[in-house]
Length: 491
Image (cartoon, rainbow, N blue to C red; front, side):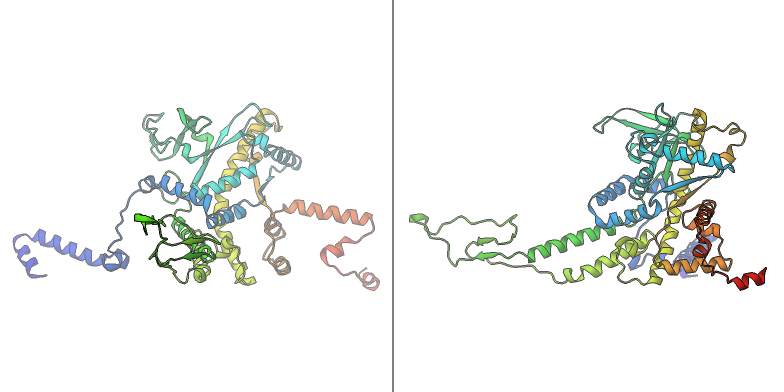
């Protein structure tokens, strides 16, 4: 305790105790470099607020900048495209699991028909696979998108999807439909912050909002976005952490491009020691040419003003360092989005089989999180479709309402990715199957197939081959033909 503290303690022990407590707390804070305010951190001033307050004042600006980069940046599109290719790919296929094979086929056939653009989209312009590809893209750029269930009179079943951009949520709405609820960002929430309704702004054909917003109950809306904090209510662009770096690369490459184009221009400038002579009292008087706004162009010949000289600013290094700079930036951009440099750049020059395989495994873990969220959306769409199909008679299931969960049971499959090295991958599967590390069912699922369908296909091929006198078992499974002697010994 210091001299001043001793004096304070003599007059007010409570105040002295409080001073000592604050001093010790401050010393504990200084144990963390990240909590200090020394020179490296002196301009790092932050605060703790709820996720909604943090996001609210930046949401629209971040979204607008992300959309600008989507329109103008190749690197931005490489990241978004990587997610779209790997999360959706060629799309998702349904496998009904009702335990009734004929009913499964009936449902799957009806679903395939509904997924066509004229049946699933209220605008009649996108199939379901195209809709979910767009949804993944909008989530990366805008932060989210809304699937609105519309019950119409046309189409295969009276159920279609309407896609609503997050901009169409009426953030100026304030009056909840139910007493005790609150409206934040165009969404009505109950006391537990559960969405109960959405206020959707209405636009005319030119994009102007002229009518009062439409209220849609939450049961008819699927809000597809990533929630990162309990207090987060609305979306934030998935690219928020990396768009500044994407823009830096854009600006850098623009500067390098301009420099290289200028260096490629062959131009001639003529400098005269004295100005062009005139006649009479105006002798020697000429108008000076302004160079403001003038650009170099190939083959240009221009006369300079008397006494003017060409001074060239030639920063060295950009052209030579552009490759290493953009590679580093792309690695950081990819890392910020949880994927590898190779996934965004498509540059495999530095990759080996092992590194490419490991990179793909790590990338798939990132894509897997997105797939999980997307499949939850697809699950709700599928269940609504089946219920609508049963209600309108497109699918006949007499006991549907008594055993609804059983009849809604299903799985999603996707086409597998092409193998990097087919021989190594197939040998690995063969070893895993032989040693019990994997089952045939697991391998079939990894390849985007239903194991029952695969077994049925194999049996059909073998049976047909027998009718034609071909022993397909040997070809399919690599079984060596037994000799007559061994066959007799076995008998």
